[in-house]
Length: 374
Ligand SMILES: Nc1nc2c(ncn2[C@@H]2O[C@H](COP(=O)(O)OP(=O)(O)OP(=O)(O)O)[C@@H](O)[C@H]2O)c(=O)[nH]1
Ligand SMILES: [Mg+2]
Picture (tube, protein in one colour):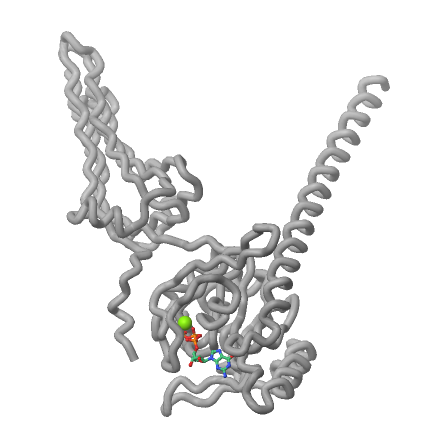
């Protein structure tokens, strides 16, 4: 097994930032100090975190101090802002895990450390000190479908079958060490973005294996694509064997423990490796049992350690062989179908809400007209 620590892809960078102090004022002349410069993050589609690191190896971003006010200059000049260009799709998080803000589009700006206020009566003309702190710039990939599955399930093989991307495929766990985005392209040039992610294992939510480090990437994908080996999975000799169905439940549970909202995302379940002897029958059985699963049957049939509280509702369960390309064309069509269906539903819901708001406004206006007449 390769060392998961040797990841080339950078999806998180911790940087030190410091905004400028406010310049001192002068009580004698009643002049006010200039405010300190701020540290401002700006979304830029042309940079990635590797660029940011290579251009700023010391990872320090410091804004200028404000200038003092004087008899000749009643308001001191402001300190220079420090602009930091970051990739689009990042969270800015403090060391105590507080979310400072998100950057979701190119050109979007976020003041991460505001400059100190210039010296004035409220701060006895001293000028406020700037803010110094370390923050993490955390990248969240954006894709239509994010692959979640245990190692060796065939996620990367599926990526090869659906897109032109050729991620490494091998018969050992954690072949994929960093996320990659591929595109399933259709004849009419429509493209759907797919994210192949490193495998999860039991305990991923508490950072076992490659851990939840990669779970954050599925937060932004529209759909989850559960990929499982239809015959199940056994991580190593010390771990119990989990059947195909149990694997799905365990993945469900890991996602839930990481973030309960994740299991409410739309999802499809892919049962892979049906080319193996007995694969189709096994897939039929897993599909039937998955479709029949209810919270009650879940409680009686499965041990507590693999039981999720809330079941993911799969729009469809699809059996494939990524290796022999069985049903993969069908899967590609269904990826498009479900994405479009979901988008239409959301559009209808937006229109319904807009119509309801309009109805309320009209009713209120009518009532006001009646009231004024009476
Ligand atoms: N028989 C069969 N083997 C498959 C199929 N898909 C993948 N495999 C094999 O399963 C092994 C793991 O495949 P990968 O695609 O690397 O699995 P993965 O889910 O990306 O694994 P990690 O990157 O470790 O999480 C490889 O030996 C593949 O050749 C399939 O449909 N049928
Ligand atoms: Mg892989």
